[in-house]
Length: 255
Image 1 (tube, helix red, strand yellow):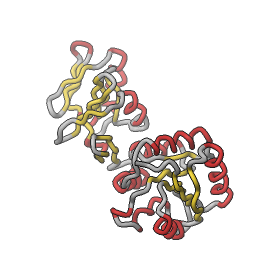
Image 2 (image 1 turned 135 degrees about the horizontal axis):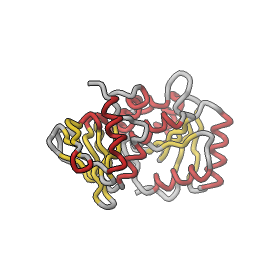
Image 3 (image 1 turned 60 degrees about the vertical axis):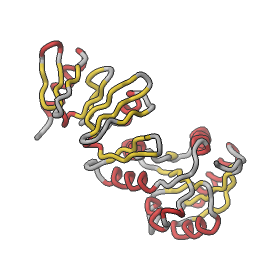
């Protein structure tokens, strides 16, 4: 259970940016109290160990050590704080954050987004984010072997993006079908995953109820408007307005 007052530490190498964030916190949520401001990662690590904050506002691009290396300096049982990254990465790179289910604030910071991030954090207990940050590192480094953090009953399950076979709408839920394991039912609509994967050419919404990984398709059948046969034998329908897009995308694949 989170305390009513959150103890925060800001780790940011630009003093003006750090001071602005502190002023914004005072304005939008006086219950979040800045206990320390650190201008590099080593001093941030020392401050965390000493002050034991509830939440860290962490810049990524800093001289010496990247903010992504923070958890390397802590044992697993010491990570009882939450992290909200502050970053100037562009919108394309932001997809890496969203795939990894890591909380972030895009610079220049906005008060409404800051308050939204704090309220989101308050709704859950601080927990280890080691897997999420490991996935984020991978997702930022390359487009290959990317990972997605999928919310499950007891936390998050990290899976490789290329192991995702297809997504199936089930009302307000989505069933995610993954290679060589049982499907995962997630309390998010299919549109959420469509937006999440919008920059990935391997995933396409073939029907109002399905998003498919093109690399999992074994055969395209023209009859009945169009059907996809997957490598595991599953068949998926194609909406009439998606047939040309599917055919064009399949023709671009190199095997």
